[in-house]
Image (cartoon, rainbow, N blue to C red; front, side):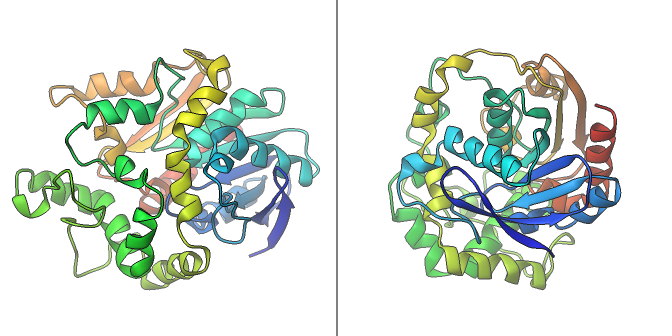
Length: 328
């Protein structure tokens, strides 16, 4: 892979660069790296694009500021703008997964003259509302365990994850993919997997004896090595910056998404269940995914796929990405 260190917003961003043509930037989520896009980089390059798969600030080979405010969506969007400029481009297409979704959605809002189109996996566009998302979660999950609330206290989640990075990543990856989510659905009500308000993030999570089809031991080792070197403070700080996002992005309150957009998710992605009414139909869920856009060009919901969308279903996701990009 061709690694380059590029200029972000007054810091350095590492990226894998392949191909020539219109620029496509791939932005990973938590807890991942550029490597999450390993199946998409070469096909996108062969389809006629210059691909930049970045390590988000706080991860991998990119710089890692300590303060929480450094991880606001506005700052992360400025990194994307810096990467575009550093590569000598005036415009780009963006794709993001998990937290990469809000990062690319926000970049498109802030840099509408630069961003041609935006696609996201797992996390749909949600406009700024009356409260920050983390405040809504505080109210929704009052007296219940919710991982984003657990993360809010500095140092606690870091200590748990850094004590055994392999265990932490295995639980995180294996419990949120299609197999893990199907297992959890089948075990609803099983006290062995029911967290209490004082649970930790890794407690009462399912463990599996075998690897899922989408991840090899070599793949896991790559992620482990990245986090053993980088730690988890930067990645967790993204969750802690959500009240800052709310204050900084007030100009986009209740704004429908203005750019050409694409959304891809799986039927078993846990994000679908964050605030889901148990009585909601699949049609209701689809409406929730598609209601905040001016120009939503493509929506794909992949059967049986969990949270790690482009890794669990690489061929389908890559084909959908290329189709979207070719038809802007």
